[in-house]
Length: 423
Image (cartoon, rainbow, N blue to C red; front, side):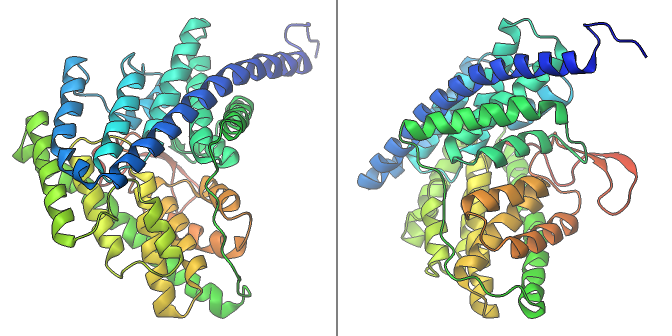
């Protein structure tokens, strides 16, 4: 077989490497900058709220402001993270207002203490950025999809300091069973550039110490298997609860502004009834308490409720960090009851619940490797595998698709169960 210079596989590979390496420099640099500004802004408003408890009472007003902003920019039907996922899977557009709106609204949500995360904002901001760069560079449709994944990886990695997990997650999450290897170089390179730049600018990565790790014998692995099973069931409960509460509140209060005010008032009331603001915000403090064995036995259920109400009210930021904190609290409770080391059990709960709710087992293991510095890998592998398989076809993201069966080697295009859309 004869090749011209243009069609020679080696030449094509070199051109691919140069093209996407240059794009990764652009996306990673911009993603690192955006991610750093975003991370520092969230940290600042969170500190402001914790120093001035009265700010919590502004949550209903903040919800109204967020809903008003989305109405002003005609983005009431903005599907958030789901829109970014379909931009990859189907080539849909990421609207021009998405980036600025998710940036501002997530910071406002954290200022008020809504139980929301940051990953939804990272994916939307990064996807928006990648799409804009793809348009500016006159990329074709296929390349724009890769550009979206690259942007997602850069901002996600900048925020969390987990570049390997960020790049794998942004490829794996779109269509379960299909891994777009063509996106590896732009996603991995942009993730490391974004993460490295963020660290240089003072954004610390999310790293936890697990302490002593038991031997991976039959008894301990059997305990972890039970935890994986329970996390699969909790994944289903979490997804159904999030979307059921959102659907019911949307039907009860169709007006987005009134809905945000009502949800904000309810969150404030519940916070005062419980007597603690530990369930406000993303949940990082709750993760620390869980790993120290200091979280209450009901913490995972209360955090689940607060997050469901925040999502239903239209507060922005995403569900993943709250999901991690729910998993940590549940894992810590399991460890206490099962006689398993609590820090490790809390960590396993975090990662297993992430795998069950996002259906991304490889990214879950990468997160465990980076967040816990490779400790306890056999335990994470067992917990993640069981939670992923037994959580069925439920998903946080309504636009996610299952290309293959979880229980057989066959192609089958499935939509998720229990999902009405992510934030």
